[in-house]
Image (cartoon, rainbow, N blue to C red):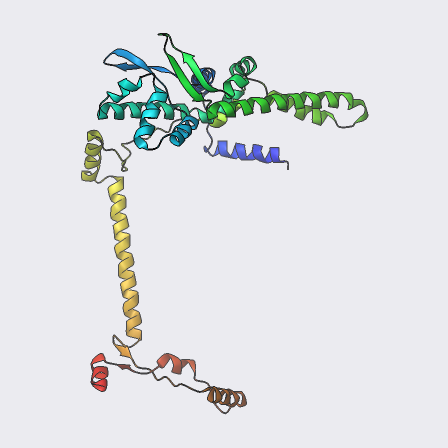
Length: 352
């Protein structure tokens, strides 16, 4: 059976068992629309810039700082304080004097805001490949191309006349450019293969199967195909916190819910009780096992045994006697019987 057939059978097995659930088309379309909008802005401008609002008034602009930019800033900074100032300078349009006038709590809040914006931008990276298969990406690639994926010290003009500087293009943009180039190359190769198959068709038998595979590959390379998104997008898992099991939650409601479950002896409490009972039974079993072993040895105490040390000559002579049958080896019963146990008090008296 071919690999494609095996994959099909495995897919049917996962669907029938409920392991694989097909995502609703409207849910996939919603995610694709949101991601395409965010990535288009992110790639076109180089960052997603938002107003920095304090007390209901805009005091500047801010954005997430790319991982590639943070690496550059870390190499340029001599210590953590200088890195923090450089990070705020790169991620906002605030002047250096304004930054120096901020309090410690304000600096901390501003750094946390930039960190959250950077993490939001980083969550878009897994969707770059799926985005590269859309018509929006194709228009952006054909219109801007390398201007998006390779730039340094870009300045973005904002509505109030302020300019924000972006040190270098993001990893998203470089990866997106690679995906677009590979997609264009794959389309060209498929078209050339289909033209070649059309030319040699009169002289080659069973070429219709090859043409069918090429058409399927060309169909998979069409823009706005939903399959790449179905492979990436997953439904959020809804957790029922009232299912009788323990759930980590430091809020007041969560602590009250866990306390109520403890008082009502829910599933989690019954599981812990059963586990404790198993541990006690296992400990009793091990204790009884060791007690029987001690009884078989004759009780507690020191067991005396006779050790005879032989020289090499005596060992070789004993081996010869054993071969001749003049000496009988000890039986298993005699070995198991051993010497009678000696009480520890008697041993002390003996050596006293």
